[in-house]
Amino acid sequence: MSELILKPKGTNDVLPEESYRWQHLESVLRRAAADFGYREIRFPTFEYTELFVRGVGDTTDVVQKEMFTFTDRGGRSVTLRPEGTASAVRSYLENSLYGAGLPVKVFYIAPNFRGEQPQAGRYREFHQFGVEYLGSPCPAADAEVIGLYSDILDRLCIKNIRLEINSIGCPECRPAFHAALKEYFQSRRDRLCGSCIERMEKNPLRILDCKSPVCGEIAAGSPVGLDHLCGECRDHFEATKAMLDAMGIAYEINPKIVRGLDYYTRTVFEFVSGDLGAQSTVCGGGRYDGLIEALGGQSAPGLGFAAGLERMLLVMDAQGISIPKPEGCRIFIASLGAAADKPAQKLVNDLRKLGVKAERDTMGRGLKAQMKYADRLGAAFSMVIGDNELEKGRANIKDMATGSTFECFLSAEDIKNAVT
Ligand code: HAM
Image 1 (tube, rainbow, N blue to C red):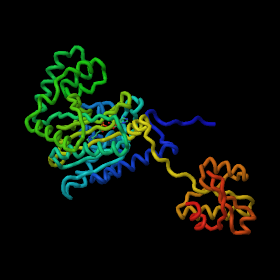
Image 2: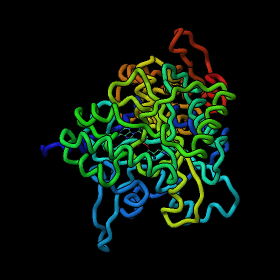
Image 3: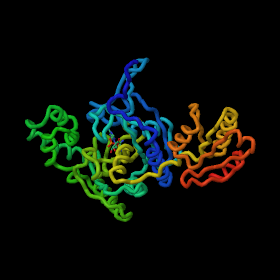
Image 4: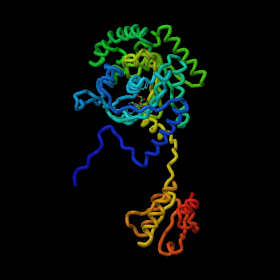
């Protein structure tokens, strides 16, 4: 026998026994997105590398260390999508979605790829539900986007999640904040790791995401963006908070949130779970008022969030939230003797066409083994067709839970009426 080939590190199979959980989650997400006025967008799984270098930022860990990048046959560098925002904005510009009027509200459920060290809740292929709200500069849009994820948590009955918000300013106030960060880190330069010394020159904000414990300890005492906001950013943050208050959405201000991607401006937020280990952020997002322009469009604001489906399912698991299992086999039709083989096959086929989950044996099993199989399928009803039943044109249907039986004609319509 040849050796088995296993899945790549950091990827997951969703097995038939668990795929219903994904389907449930996705249907709740789709429904909520539709209720909040978002329409689905689908984009390619890979894009030209430059999109992410320019969109996500060349000083981020995602771009520097985590992208799955390769050269295509035409010699162009392409990258498996590490996140959806850059793709959504690219598509918005390429297809002039703004032409139909603003705002443009899109959502996606899509796999993403990052070459991170896998652990519980962190994978190399993972799935995000994301929304992008393009065109609105108003705090109401910030509150609306946050409100959608807050509602999704309610719809999924997920509890014990903290909403943390912050503002990281705009290009007007960013230089002063960067200068303050640089000054702070410069005086502690000898304790920073090599990458952070580089980050200090290029983008000191990125030091705040360094995974080294020493850098983390130093970063804990660093200046915060909220102390350096310009008047307009401060007003925007206050108005966003007031709108959240009006909507009854509880939040905490966490001045340390900076997010790991370069495109953010002003509001940034994270929904953090107390039920996950180190990978506790279930959803993250914020405003990116400079991204559309950076990707070649006319300057326009935007914002959004993405939530990891794997992490949401982990939280639901940890909280024992039960997800309705799909209905199993409705009726199992066993056959006894060669003459019953074709009529049984036809009945099963006709029942399925009528929308009844019908099953039969296709393994050549004897009657006893067929009934065992019916049990394994969890069939609600069963029926045995043999020579007698064929002659009478009727057979007994057995209710598998109670053991009671009743007679029925061998017609798909009659059987359907009897078992549904
Ligand atoms: P992000 O914070 O990089 O933001 O990812 C958002 C969410 O995706 C995380 O909170 C987490 O639930 C999930 N996630 C990220 N990386 C992994 C991983 N390696 N394994 C499992 N789950 C993961 C973004 O991607 C932005 N595009 C969000 C956004 C949309 N901002 C504005 N619009």
